[in-house]
Length: 338
View 1 (cartoon, rainbow, N blue to C red):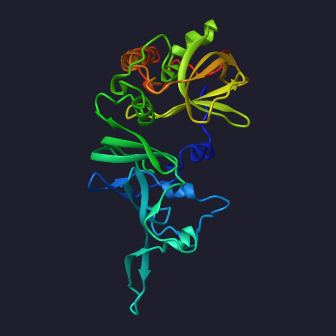
View 2 (view 1 turned 180 degrees about the vertical axis):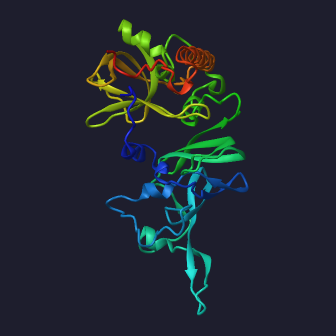
View 3 (view 1 turned 90 degrees about the horizontal axis):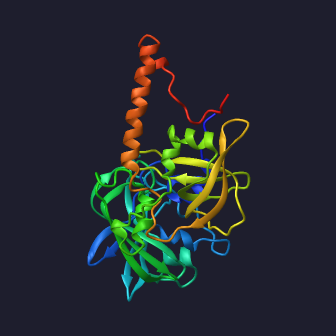
């Protein structure tokens, strides 16, 4: 059985609401620095709660590209986030049965209560707004996952701007870096070039024969990822990049620590054997500061070296069994030892 187990679908949906959409979603509309642009964030959703239930009958999805059922129009005024209108697609049937679609303004009082009128200060919202700019450099057919040449992030607290930062992407340079980690690194000073190189191991190297050394020696190592806790099992998650898939390291033992869900962390751990496969026994865990990356700057070189070594190993195994490369035994670091 593989060392890495699939992170539950439900956990991902809780951690990344946009991932619940299996199709790329239409963005909100934002007036930003005098121009109309898209915003890949949905501040209105934070308004809904037990006290303010979401009116699902009113905000009904009309296409797979807009599961939330509306497009909000926003702007910044006096350093505040303001909702200027909320629109939905409305179908007008005709006698021939063809009909047509139009944009319909949803009355403010239907969402915010009696006497409410646009514009409305978004005092209920605290969080991060994402504004894509430039050309799309990587399309992701899910939620707001696509990447653009440049992305502006605006931190909001109780509806007011507290800071802005931006991430500029380079497809070649950032091929082994995830979007979520680049955003985290960009929060720190000197963000664009924060390398933070030291003796911790990039978690993706644990998916290679490199892990054999750690399994056999039992030595302690340090690695980094994004932490998610579960009732039965916690995980250290390494998000996907243009070159590598997302991976999860199961944590079976963890010291008591106040670590927020979704935090960037560093753990000191070693592997130990389970009935099937292996798990992480974590001795210590700490949150990373903004600017500290979870993707080691030396990773691309080590990864390429390991790929070449595995190709050589597979080629040798293929020669030994008469050249049938499909059946060549390749060292699998995830299977339990005999």
